[in-house]
Length: 349
Ligand code: NDP
Image (cartoon, rainbow, N blue to C red; front, top):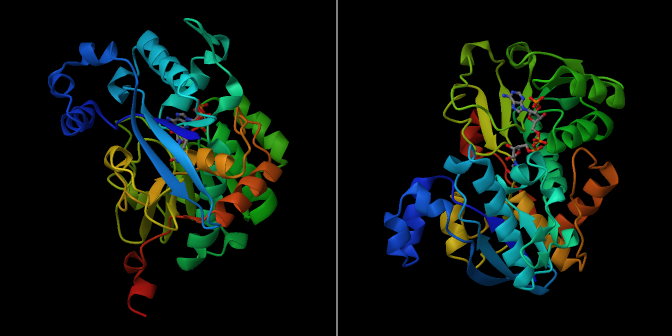
């Protein structure tokens, strides 16, 4: 059995979800009440691969909301409690979705293996980042040419280049795709210098300078609320892959010739009979689309690979991306693409 550990995108949407699930006391509760609420296994469902194999899954709401991010102890407790519930529910492999994997890594929860009388078994959990990185690379490779961007002549900026997903994307784009130039963007200089040495290339630039030069921008950082993008400064056409969480680039970078695509999202070959996940995830096609990290847990279960496939920071290797990518195709997932009507040359063809 696979599990998805997630959360609502905001306190307001969490309250609405609680109302629709029949928990009026939560729907009316304040943030303090939510901070002390335990995780809930809210839904069970089955999923059938394109190969015909059916597996069982469950969605665990960690009852975390992004408004709790600044409360270190609460965020830590929410993630660990949700993992404990997944393990106690007998789930073989669970994906840490949304902010839960970031909290796990950034708050170094690897040191917190004992929760009450449970010892967390790390092999039951995956961040899902290998599949997310692979999907984002597929999106770059498929969608840039649709906009007339030849990747072998193109400049691609990766914002969040030194992160777990960003570094994997950089490895793939430089070694597999063979993009003409890679621009590396993050805040701390030393990891950028280390990444540049590992890649044997790439140019380190500020965000503003990188945006002015890039034909494709891959965003794999959670960006500050106040960040604004000077749209006039961008090249045309420009493909922007919004791979961060939450996905809020389209409101900041809208404009003629700028194509924003939700990154790290996959579409399944058939509808999935889930209701709460559909409501919580806020996708355009909620019964088929999901975060690639969630799909990784399904893929590992389909493949009977019950192991923490994506774990730790900055060690996603290309052969692992190949493996999860082949499984992704085999079981009926495809990376989300641009809507044809948003590409003028194709829409009028
Ligand atoms: P990491 O914490 O490993 O990496 C974050 C990266 O972003 C680092 O390079 C960091 O470097 C950089 N960064 C952070 N803030 C800024 C900023 N203001 N400007 C420029 N760079 C910045 O995260 P992950 O790689 O695990 O995840 C990256 C993003 O992808 C997250 O937003 C995560 O929520 C999202 N995600 C999306 C998924 C999906 O859509 N399917 C699945 C999983 C994750 P530095 O600190 O030096 O700036």
